[in-house]
Picture 1 (cartoon, rainbow, N blue to C red):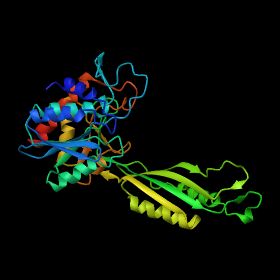
Picture 2: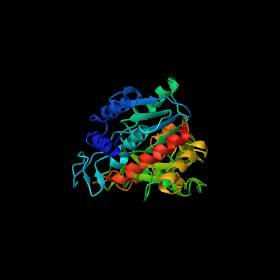
Picture 3: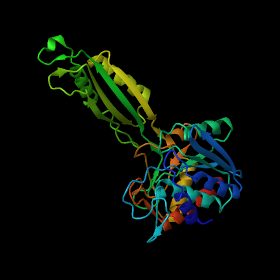
Picture 4: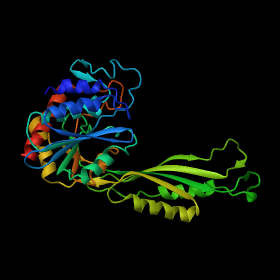
Length: 364
């Protein structure tokens, strides 16, 4: 199978989240031709599918997403044209992550092994009807693999230099402190909520949450908004709100951090309302046969020993980690989400070789 031709076919489908644009139909047809049993899994408006080819040895799953972010303006080539120019393949999703999907399918076409694909159309969106729901289906049907590789663009400068074996957790909080509106010249007749919110925020940011550890950088609490919606200079507002984001390592969990926030608010702003939304918990995949096989495959094809780290934002790996060991490895991510997103054609071929070597090693 020609990895470039498949990647071009995928890029020519305008699958801006949550639209599918025909991308998954292209993939399903290719996989069925290779002997995969494909199960279409639509949840809400999101298209997903699970494809599996039985075989001897351990079960390796590849997880990827076909949805992409909007292309924006100013492209030198059609963002949905799949144009090759100067040895580079251009298109929205070339790096993140239709290129990696094409590479894995091309790899699976070349070697036997117990391989499956978890493909979602809801990674760049709200991520509620995609990987989470497919994993629930997989668990209910006895399809959880021994190891999962997510094809996120983890490489930093050259293909093979970084593998992600964990991610920080992420949570957002909205704090609302209520008071009593009044004239600024008569503060004794009002109750200024800002005077309670500000000390609470100061206490939350006074000390680092932790010092980090061997695999994770220190956790970070960032205040992202403080607002009272006040258009007047002489009015004490009736309410004040703040929003914050916490990126936390594996020394914390969201429940513990939520209780800490409640405790600070109880001290400085009793009665404040706290609303928390958790994007994902921190996770770390311990070294084992799976990570060793992935490292060996990268070394064999590229000659590079990859750095293992846990940096960056969140990905669907945070959901997969609840079920099985997971690592992320894919193309160089410099151009992801940018205008003129592109991947070297040679890198696509090399990534397919790495995935092929991994299948041979892990599933053999």
